Image (tube, rainbow, N blue to C red; front, side, top):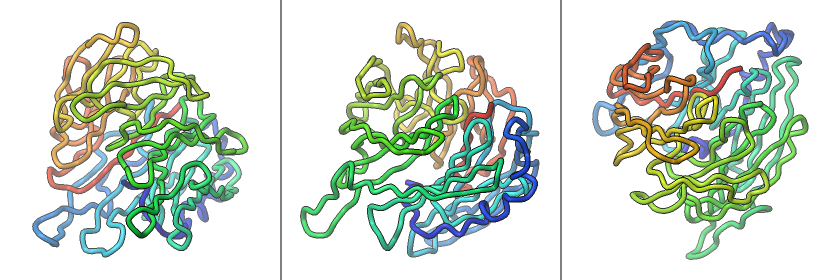
Length: 352
C-alpha cells in the first residue's frame, strides 16, 4: 500500500544527515523520538472532511530493542497518492515529512533505505541508500520487469510492485515483497539486497498471499516466510535463502512482522494476526506448530501493529494505541497513544 507512493526523492533526511549523525559511530544508538505529539496526523470526520488527529509518544523510547522509524498519515483531499510518510531524523530530533513511499532503518542504525517509484518510468523503482556513519548516499535502480512481466491484457499496462522492506536480524540483507502486476495480493517473489554492495537478486515465489503484509524473516535471517492459501484457510511457509521450501506450518493468520519480527528472539515461538479482521494475536510453538496462547488485538480502523518486543512480550495494537503486552494479555506499557479515529500507520523495527 505505502509502496505505491510516486514522486522524486527530495531528501531532507539525506541532506541534513551530514551533521552530527554522519560523524557518529554506528555502535552508538541514535536518539529515538521524544515524548510529545506527532505532526501531520489526520482524522476522518465525514465524507471528504478532515480534522486534526491525536497521536503522541508517551514513553521514553531510548534503550529499547525496537526503534520507531516512521509513520504514514492520510491526506483525504489529494487526487494522487493519499499517503504521506514522516521519517524520524535523529540529528534534528524530529519527524520530517518526506516525498517517498517507504523507509527502512537497519537494526544497527547505520543504513537508511528510502524507496520510491518513478511516475515517469512505470515499473522502475529507485532506492536511495544513506550511510549514516559517513553521510554519503547513493541510488540503486530496480527494474522489476526484468524479474516479472507487466500485464498488458484488456488494454493498458499494469506493473509489478515491490513493497514492505524488511531488514534481516543481522542487518546484512534487505528484503522486499514483489507482487504480480495484475494480482496485487499475490506474490511474484522476493527481492533481496545483500550488503555491502546492495546487489539485488530475485527469488521467484509464485502466488503467495500478500495482502496486508508480505514476506518476513525468521529470528536469525537464515529463512524467510510468507502466508499461502486463501483468506480463511492459510498456512505459513518457510523458505531457505535459495527459495526452497523448508517447512510449512498449518496455522491461522498473517505473520506479524513489526518490532523484532514474526519470531521471538530465541526462535522458539512465532506470532500471527488471527481471527477475522485480525482481532487476535496467536502465538505458536516453532517446533511443534501448536498454539501457545491467544491475545486480543484492538486495532480499530487502522492496520494491526504486531510483532515481538522481547522473548516474553509482544508489540501490539491496544485500546490506547501501541503498547507492550505480556503473553497473558496484560498491557505492561503504552508507547504511543493514538486517537480512535486518527489515521496513522506507525512503523517499528528491530534495534540492536
